[in-house]
Image (cartoon, rainbow, N blue to C red; front, side):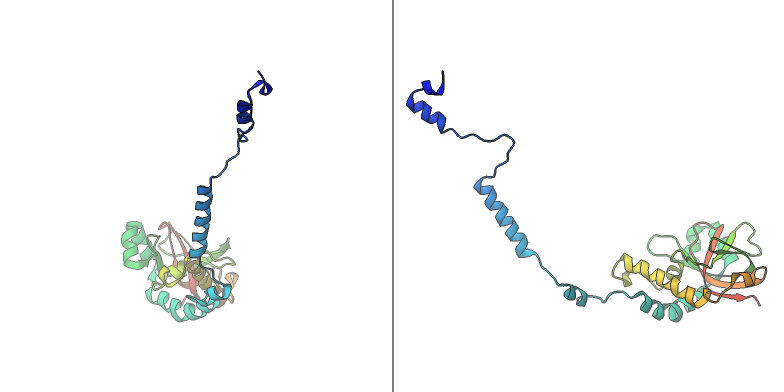
Length: 229
């Protein structure tokens, strides 16, 4: 039987039956209204701020150069020199009990490794990968070296000073930049005029900071390098 063979009433009903394309999602009027209300609520509760408003509200932007000038020589250097422990004593303490050595001589941010202020006197050797090798009497089993650049790694100067904390900065980026700024200031004040070749084979005294992972690898970031008296 075809549509033409149906009675008039049946044919009319068949012709008016709506068809829905397969795979197409449709929204009822209720769903559409709900979406409109949702977007309206988001727009009403969103606050837009111009770049100038963002810059002028809250703390001023961190300036690494200004921070280094106000912190490295006036504060960090005196703190490290005052608290510097002989490296042989430090080595012995770390080898015996890392946690006890840290509590006695060091500082650390949160639960990170301890950093220390230390001093050493030894014979300067060759420079390998930016590290000046130093032979210290009584530390035959330890590898002692001093960072001389050009790259200065780590944040030992920041962390060993003892008064610089994460809470003083807006975020982790500024905290990291502070450590880099102190390293840069040290390079300008200490390493810029230092010639490792001129001291090779000679006795030197170094004061600096270190963050050792083991007692047998001791790498100082210096705040002073002088001929030993």
